[in-house]
Image 1 (cartoon, rainbow, N blue to C red):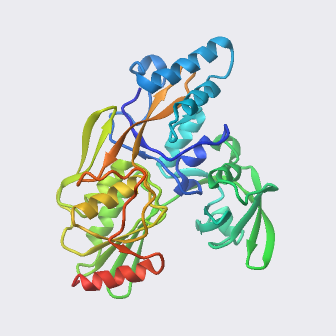
Image 2: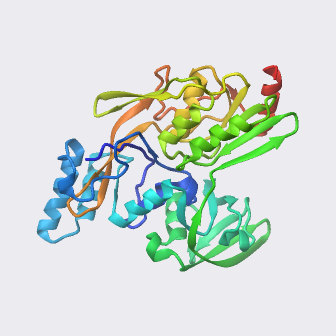
Image 3: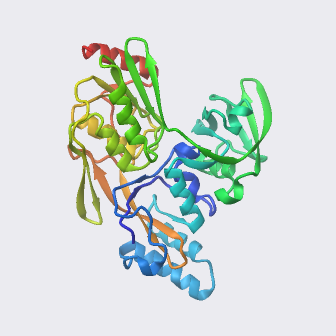
Length: 386
């Protein structure tokens, strides 16, 4: 089993769509994963290179090995073992899916370039990447997604909708087409889009009136933490700061810790346990601790984004504005199975610097703001005497 640990979201749906939940802020929906510090980001390439699996990993590996000996699918056997364990966050990836998962954490993905969420049983487009097939087709935030390749999506989990949109492994789906049924107000229409390999800049900056710098982090992909630090260093000296983590479903925890280092002068960011062993994450010294900071969150703020929010709130560095966050604080660890696939199983939980558990609870904002959260952030910054 590799030393790499993950904060992952549930992946309980049919075979072939496991990756669709891995990095949903990038891949379309609202769930993601995050990687903790480790000596190796990936499980060993072959079972003989990895440490002997223990605990639940050993049980899942045994089920896969028995299936191989019997001439049946080891992946399906592993999935059944994970399901029986009651691990709601567990998942099994084929080698190709896991490779694409790594690409997603690096900010690369295959798709049409739209993001969506479920609202009242319907699937609503929440964002469209510039220059993507979805943007070129004129799709925009607020549009309702009615069907994918003729399959109605109302009432379906957004994770299944993501699977339909993506169409399988990246190598197979890139270049294929997908037909979307859409609705905008009273208008209904269809668009046929071609899936393609895309990349995403997950950190954007906006300067608002009143000397406010807004740093929007859509996901913690590779390099995003350093981007946040650069923005903070280059922001006007008299600017108030808003860190917008709404809809951020996680990513690489190491990047979230780097982002924390932009606002903290060292110190504890979070503690976590892996199969009973206690560990800690610390910020680097030298961050900007002088300028007022507001963090915006909502129900789509998950995992590594919650870890960062909890650290800034507990350390008294930021005022948190918005709605209660998702509540994902469990730790997953991947282990290579005999056939080369990867099982990702829950091994522990993390806590904020004050010892608060996030899993199932989320982060409660200091100031509730379901609407006009950015305006409320400006009011808070003014009150902090910027």
